[in-house]
Image 1 (cartoon, one colour):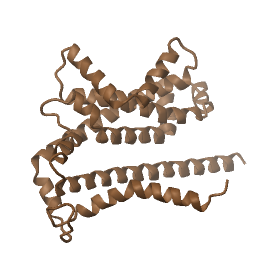
Image 2 (image 1 turned 180 degrees about the vertical axis):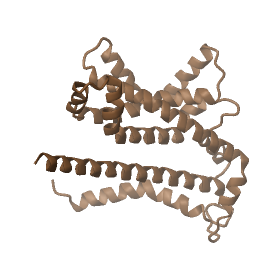
Image 3 (image 1 turned 30 degrees about the vertical axis):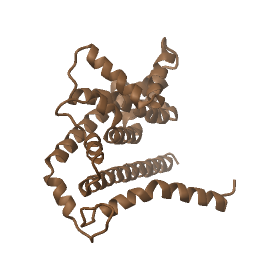
Image 4 (image 1 turned 90 degrees about the vertical axis):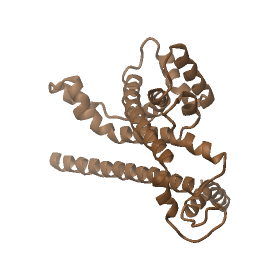
Length: 272
């Protein structure tokens, strides 16, 4: 299919609609004026003031801890779920199991947050840091499962079978053969889970408690009273962190793919 000028125009408009507001936010984070809509010259004062804002720093630290913990736990559980879906084609409850994996992807966040809130209240769990971690793990693991499953579907199982034939135990085969080969997908799933945790506002607002205010909740509570340059500064830092993470993941995946191609060429030369 030919790429027409209309296609280019539509794509340009869509990308501009998505990214120009982000670029404006980043530019105005260097604004010297306290008024976010009036340019007063270039300055780094709001980045300095941001570090002295204890409320923002505490919320950022809580968000980072929640993101790392929920992404790590979600990656482990999501990888196990992907293995179950790809390696065990038929088992009792497979349809229910797959439905439970896909449901959080399409379920409104309000429903998920309210359901978790009712669960924590009914079992008498005080809402706080760990309830947010549990809540984020429940929906981030589903994204990890989808990403890892897409890699396992095209995985060459003859490599595992060769290792098993040579006497390698199944658990060791997974850690020595399978995991290194699917590692780019696992890392991508972790990065996606971490980003989703950083971005979440709705579910966290239902499951958080005193002393566990995440950064999106903090920003939202301040934005209702008016956008401040400090919000622009910390938002720009978040954009930079996510961008660096995406670039690092892409470079890592590309490096592993090049290494795999070199190993294949070396193997062909050895056979020849």
